[in-house]
Image 1 (cartoon, rainbow over the protein chains, first blue to last red):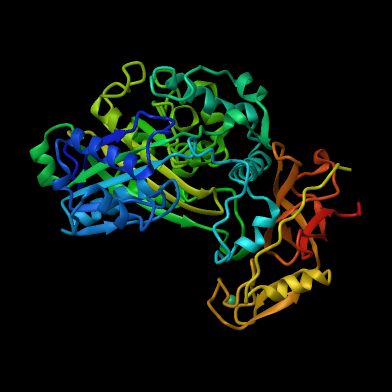
Image 2: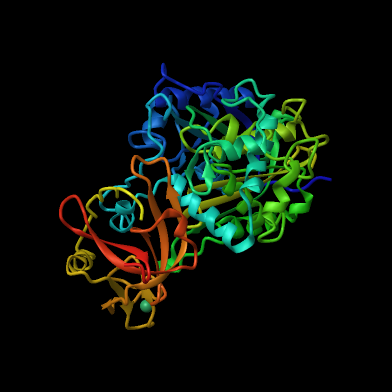
Length: 390
Length: 133
Ligand SMILES: [Zn+2]
């Protein structure tokens, strides 16, 4: 089969560090850029399109292009939180198809661990943000916003803490094989339930890790891909969505994946059942559960039963997910997990995941990013990828 | 009843919202309603987010609603309850549930507005379980 692809992911790189006390954020951006370019067999002089998001310091893309010495004719600094880099895949493919650039570089870097950034506090986006007066005094942290989504899911569908815990258990089974993973110990459902409650109903082990580092992607068009050979991965479909509080008509029952998923599947002319592997954004266990429902891997409300009993464990269950250990166990660089989701999907399609978690004959894969706060003020992006011969 | 309560930071105000906060100081919860499409919205804006009309008007809300969802922030220095409360007028707002045992709070329970002084002496609408004030 040879499915048409507008663009290809030619190179990926995940920074091996998880605590970058000896590196600056611009330095991390440059290190991941060079890593992904080397992986692609290209150099920084080949780059003519640059993509980055809110983690890039200073004037963002301008400052990073200057630091790295890039000379570009296309720039895109779309910021949708942790999903930004998943969004950038679609934007890069479209820019290449439109002739705006031929080699697109996407970078992410951060060092919240080295900087000791607190996670229980509220994020203040500044007094000009129109929502801030009506939210900040009430103490919204990331954990209790996702906690409210989980509480509502339990209320509406009978989802249990045990079912959510299975998502962490599956991630930990994968992370044990990743030498760079922050948490490599295999955990049980009881381990998750016995970890301290952070924000009901989310325990400490329902939460992702905090880590430093970053990652980069190199995206090219068909012509450049042909010159680079078989390791290029096809971008078959992309979709993005914005979901917000809708003037007070708050709906926590679904997130933006319910909109971005169908767009991506339609472009790829594929369905959830066609996917051999999925990278699902996993800031919290509830993020995975709700997203799997919204992408159509199971019926709405059936996510708890779907993820239970090891169904997400590679080699055990029906839908292997986040085989690098995901954000829950491996890496969530800069508190933004959209980059590493794409990278592990590319590894799977190249057959370069760890042998213990590699999906046999992995041909079609999905990567999904979730940014902002789930179902309330968020950006979602879905990317469908195929092996070079898919 | 729950123990100590956290201190409340001052809300940020601006030209569009200062009337809301002034009313809160008088013990009133205001919401914005659109005269063009008839829909209420929250947080309040000069321009209706539903239809784009500039003909929006402040109305006093009943202060009654139900809990849409909530989460107890256990790891905070002083644990507290964040919630989305759906007002009888139809809009859902972020708030805190106060004066309640954490275990007594549940989705769907009726609540009523009350107010808390913030650090700088402003007033913040919060909610307590109805009939227990
Ligand atoms: Zn209107």
